[in-house]
Length: 206
Image 1: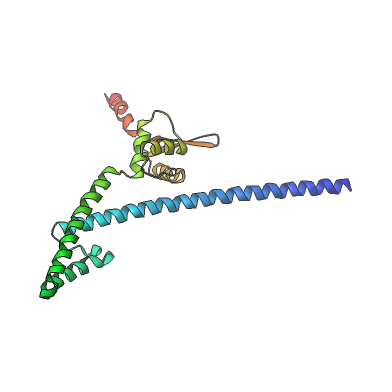
Image 2: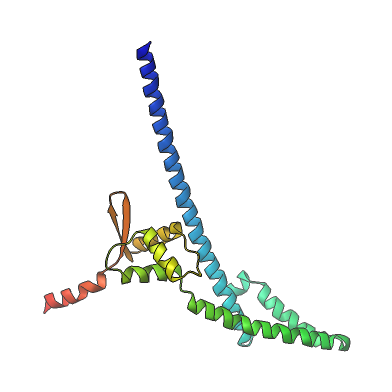
């Protein structure tokens, strides 16, 4: 009877260990996928922001015709310009004052948006640039959590998540823009040092 109990206890322990391992692996996979989604969403928002700035600047510079690819992705831009031209030509006298007022307000708003968004774009570097610049300024390896803490302190107006920073670091490693160093269960990152090897090569040839 006692041997059966011991065997049952060992089997239960094995099941518990297996379930615990599966749960940990599942959680890590969810975290990885969530980080990938967050990074893609940030890239999509940046592209959409740049697209809006470029469209507004195009209209402010004289409404030049967009390229074929641009017209296909954003069909509403040329159609809006055509509608405005048609309204200005076919508007009745009773609506002239109201139409003129609306156009003046719309022009003022559109004139402010490109300047504000362009200024924001210049003062808001991408997360990739922030991480690369931070690594290049360090003399020792840094973990994703340490980099997140430093960037959050330097840019409190931005929401920076460790999972997104880790994904960005891995992308930099894949592009040979950073090195990954594993110490035990921890992973640390450093900037690439290829440019530093050029003086040594010059000295060797001389």
